[in-house]
Image (cartoon, rainbow, N blue to C red; front, side):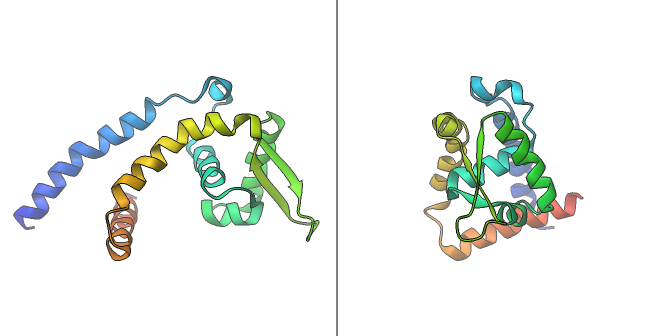
Length: 145
């Protein structure tokens, strides 16, 4: 292993726990505080925040879980008023999910900060550099487990 790889590993071994710790210390907005949101809920809310209304199957594909899992999460959050579900006018079998308007600003203030920070970090990179970074993080995750 080269010295530059060792130096990068040392930096990342310090950086990653700080990033995770900072994310964990960012409390949800008061109106979502009692909902016991899991990381998969945060990913679901992030997709809806960044991309707008999406179908259940599309959310399932993005989250890499079964559509029934997404349906359960959406059902739970819609009963609590956080999400809205509606039938797709073009295909009544398709359910479209969105963030309830009364919660959009709070969720944006909470999860949008992370997206904005990633944008600051990723905007200066080329498409190839961004792909390399994402690929590297995915490889790291896979190697852990």
